[in-house]
Image (cartoon, rainbow, N blue to C red; front, side):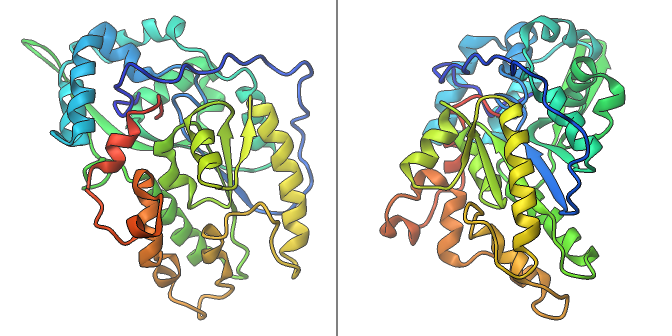
Amino acid sequence: MAPIAITPPTVEPKQVRPSMQRANTANMGTKRKIICFSDFDGTIFMQDTGHALFDNFGCGPERRKVLAHQLESGERTFREVSNELYASLDVPFEDCFEVMKTALDIDPDFQTFHEFCVNNSIPFNVISAGLKPVLRRVLDHFIGEDMSKHIEIVANDAKVTATDDGNKWEAVWRHECELGHDKARSINEYKAAARMESDNGTIPMIVFIGDGVSDLPAAREADVLFARRGLKLEEYCIEHNIDYIPFDTFADIQKQVIKIAKVDEQKTRGKGLPSNFNPRANMWRRVSSRAAVPVFAALSPAKEEKAFLWPDTFTTPATVAATVPPNVEAAVAVAAPVA
């Protein structure tokens, strides 16, 4: 569920077909530590779960247009708009999922890729601006509870209360910020924990998978970025010369992860990192021992790098030093259906 995607005029998700031959999901034999973070709407699922909820049980598409304009113009913040969207819902929690069974299409190769991750001990995390209970319920239905339980969901929480007047929905925001969930911060929190737990400096390879421009703050913290072909994230990467790997389905991602993992395992033995790694993200990997640099100092971006957190302004050297409006990223986020 993603209130961040409330604008109607978006790029329609590309219709994808499953691979002709099912990929091998067996253990690939590498000892390289890997962890995957993935967007939800437009990435794992081709449609937006928030649209299904708000259009069928809430304010409807016309009101979403108004809210989208208010968000983009800066009249209201992301959290203010999202709170109104959630407040418009009046449906018991369990009842809202019947419509999603027919409204949503999962990436045709996601289940195979996830099986590959489980068999290779690769943690797979959903990182979303939506509501964790909703995303969990959708995954339980589409891939089964036995497989869904292997996926950690990093998202906001939800409170749904039955009252005499109906059902009240509220978002319980993950972070005290205008976006409610700072995806880049969540990944850096994981990095800090992984760094502190590493005795030999072997830090997991961070993979991020997404489709929209609002994924960039999190994507830039990853070692390797996968962008769904033909959508906003790929367009932005091309325009701004950002390294990424395009994909049509998760089968493409699986093939590349196998290649990159084996190369990375060899390179990290003393020969450097693969050329397609994100140089900014690799800063945290350079700390090879706990005594070298304080972990939070290693994770803190330089001042000029902070501009990347607001990609809409990251165009010229002059804008890098400019003061960035606090909700500009939220305005950019309405450009595409993302979680």
